[in-house]
Length: 188
Image (cartoon, rainbow, N blue to C red; front, side, top):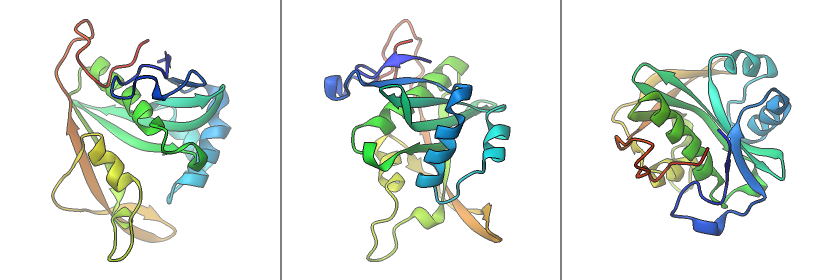
C-alpha cells in the first residue's frame, strides 16, 4: 500500500506535500512504531506486544522524508475491519495525516470486501466537565464514525485496572475500485 500523499483524499488536494508518503508496515519500522505508540498512547504496547500484533494485523505508515511519523493498525474480523490503533507524532498533527492513515484503512476494507469499520477507544478519552477530552473524540466523527450506544465493560486492562471502551462505527460505500467513487481511496 504505497501512494503519494498528494492525492489520498480529494478533499485536501495539494494540502499534503510530496514529503509525506503512505505505505504499508515494514520490518524496519518496528522501533519507530513502538516509539510513536509510547509517546502518543495512553495504553502503549511493549515491543513484545508489537511483535505479536504485526503477525496478525496489517497497517499503514505515514512517513516524512522516509521516516515514520504516524501509523494505523487494522485487521479483518469476518465482515468487519477493526482499526486497532492510530497515532501521529505530536509535531506532525493538524496536517491531515490522520485522514491519510484512515485512507489506508478504508482501502484495506474495500480490498477485503468489508463495508464496516469500527474502533474502540478508552472511555477515559471522553471529555469530562471543563476538560476538552482526547483529540480522537473529535477525529473519528470528523471521519464519518458514529459512537455506538452503550459501553463495552472492562474492555481494556492496564496497570491492574479495567477501563470501559466506547465503540465507533462507520459503514463505507459499496463501490468497486474501477469506479473510483470511494472518496477515501488512495493510489497504489
